[in-house]
Image (tube, rainbow, N blue to C red; front, top):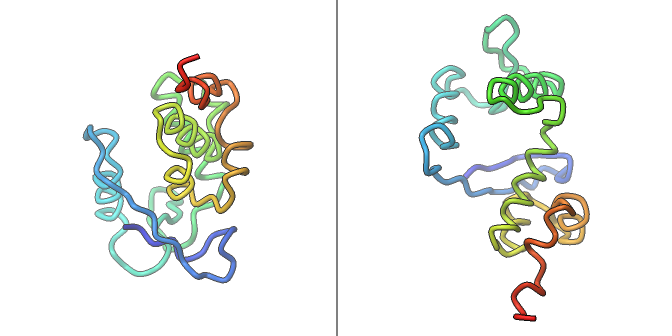
Length: 141
């Protein structure tokens, strides 16, 4: 379990626990990636993801701009359209892919920490995928 102590939707710092499990492949295993990062960052208390100016780990928070730069660099390395990759698109991609795979909306919302299913459905599950996860598909019409 990963505890998110504070976020833009948790301004009172009540904290939220999010389950993180091993991936099926070494290259996409979030726990292995986190362990590798902690080997570099160290286990000191503080923010989990920190800035690395000039490849030197600090305990300062990583900026949104730095996150975008990392995502775009990795997207280009994977042969993807880097200009379309954002932190938001990763979250929406997770929600959409999970919905298409038949994962219940309440489970998706628990993972993405959406309090309102309407927000999840309207803003995160991409409309182009709607035919694949619509409930009418299961009616045998």
